[in-house]
Image 1: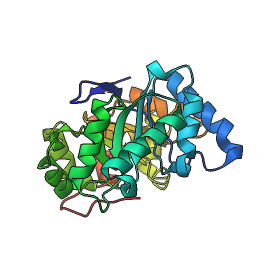
Image 2: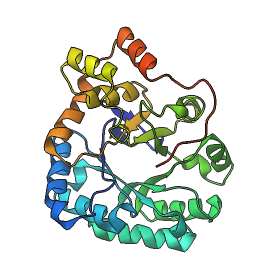
Image 3: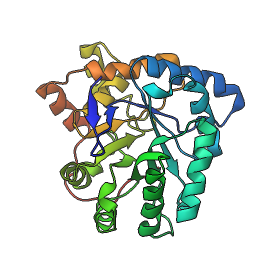
Length: 277
């Protein structure tokens, strides 16, 4: 598994596991736990979750899946913007720790910008880091201007990642945000890297999947993971999907493959507003 080293010094796999929409139905919990365990076994040891997902339900699923394996994993969670005051973020982090039954979250993110000043949220994150409750912190759904503003905040340079929507059907960040994050040594974490599965029926992806003996999903993931500063966190609740996604790390796209992908999914030619889900 290819890895990325964060500016904090931590090393993470380039392909992780997302948990959005997990923890929402009790009758799906067992399958979700199995899927996460299978992903860990395949080397996808970065798990991304949030207090928003299932209103804490996803964090509970994560807690069950990682029981007895905490030392193998890199855990990421996120705080709601309305909880991102200094005291609110600290309390939210404590609740997340309790739900996952762990003593530390490796990377804690502001889920998106809200009404609290970035200075206050960053202060909370730095307090949590000093207390050993989190290893490092970052943001999510921040556009180029947001990152520039964050860089001017005290301790803003401590931000290690920006988690954003990024897939072949939504390549807007390649225009300015991705290059700037690369220059600032900020890892980009791609959420929903397969879109809403709407891109997987594309004929080009089907053709390349046949060529490389993998699924279209593996090709779509390999295409965005060719950027060395990007981590992808696809969510998969079925064992076969987890296994298929893992094969993305073995796909070596050549120049002809990349040209075909750019023809089918053109890269941006101008700045566009940051896409969000």
